[in-house]
Length: 117
Length: 115
Image (cartoon, rainbow over all chains, first blue to last red; front, side, top):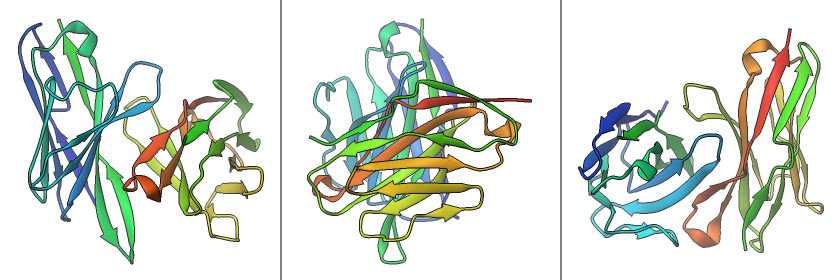
């Protein structure tokens, strides 16, 4: 099956610092990856679409200068939360899109729990 | 606008009973896909079942079946013979092709199975 990993699985950082989250497709190439954010007891909200070799497309209301996305290879996308604040504390989930059996399938990573103190 | 609606924030069901989780959607696309995911307390998103908008038969995967009523724009999940391990959050989701195949999620239903 298709496996997507995220690193770290959890991270605690101080307010004002930056933190980078990695999303990797382990056994397939993903030209497109998606980043979601989930606050406690809420649903997943799409933040941005990351395309390999090009700029990410951000959803309305998501600050692109705060949430930097880089998709430098077909198996790796990174999300950097810059100048993190406590309100950025959340569960961040990535998903990677693969073309299989003449169709696009999306596979989710296990998520990264970010706590900003 | 594309939208997914889940009207049941929480449900309690006795073990071994069947349960139906409601989901309605709104889209102007003719081609779209509907998903159900399970999210246990660990946070991982577990894919359960998929229904394409052109599929005439309701999708089934083991104890999971999707009651697809296209005219009513509903895609309810039916879990037969519920088990304690079914306790989790359940999300209905939609992928619509006019938006580069992004997946959007409903607000979720927390299902609790009573022994």
